[in-house]
Amino acid sequence: MISRYKPIFSLFLKSAIVLFAMWFIYNKLVANTNLKDFRNILSLIPAAEITAVLSLVILLMLVNWGLEAFKWKRLVQQIENISIWKAVESVFCGLTWAVFTPNRIGEYGGRVFFLSPKRRIVGIVAMAVGNIGQMVLTNIFGAVALSIFIYRFMALDYRLNYALMALSAMFCVFFLIFFFNIRWLNGLLLSMRFTRKYKKFYSILGRYQKKELFKILLFCLARYVVFSTQYFIMFYWLIADIHYLDILMMVCILFFVQSTLPSLDLFDIGIRSATASYFFSFVTHQDVAVIACTASIWLINIIIPAILGSYFVFKLNFFGSIQRS
Image 1 (cartoon, rainbow, N blue to C red):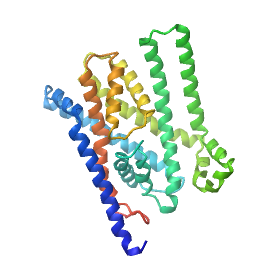
Image 2 (tube, one colour):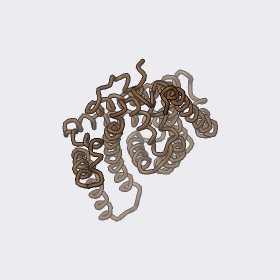
Image 3 (tube, helix red, strand yellow):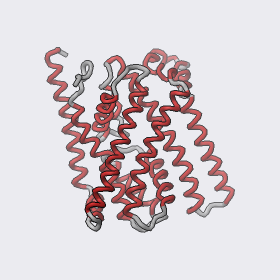
Image 4 (cartoon, one colour):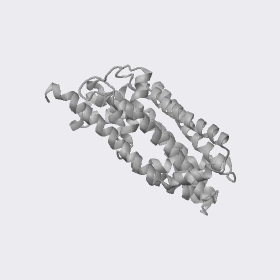
């Protein structure tokens, strides 16, 4: 490509990404009846109370993605040193890309373009390590919560219940062993002839020692606690007849089931709502409130950050290093 056309093409590409994301968001918000139900529920609550609760949930959203930025900075310090603000920019930019791509795959592109060109593919591998850590915790808490749910609400033979609990325990142990020995993947890939020529990209897996992986897992745990708290606040606030332990159990199951289903962020609200409606039906009959709570968290955690991230899309340079502010 002729050098003088690169800035024009880059601006066109960034504009297209932002416009496409905003178009998706606008259409989904207009069509979302669950948010209308949420507004109807809020109309019965004092304005001061609404402001206080939603402000807290939005603050937790910022804490959540702030923790993700610290985690991202720590993940890539193995290959490139970036500032915490640059990590924040890349995280929010990635959220804009993720909103219209299957399984949030665009989030990888949105982030790694904040790295130097030669380190972007390695950055994808580093980001995958962080995502695996988040998945490990989601699966562990989800498996435990699902075991409790089956024991309480499914009339199974006690021997089958014990077998499921044992299977759940093995499931959790497997994921922990896998994560803390993620360097095994490096050895596995090196053992295959056709992947050896790409070892400069995935060799970073061998650099993550158990101590470092433990610190990354702590960031993942902190994020899990934060967005679980968001759900807990909304459900406990709007559904008075539900026990707080039931909320915690259902939220863990909700995360677990959602993580296993392929989706787009924008269409994920339908999956979230259907999942929440089914599982929460065992502990409350306020189906509208359950779906409204789920929709509100989706708006706060996914849509608002994606809109904020559209600004950072314009700070990218696809053909070189990122533009410095």
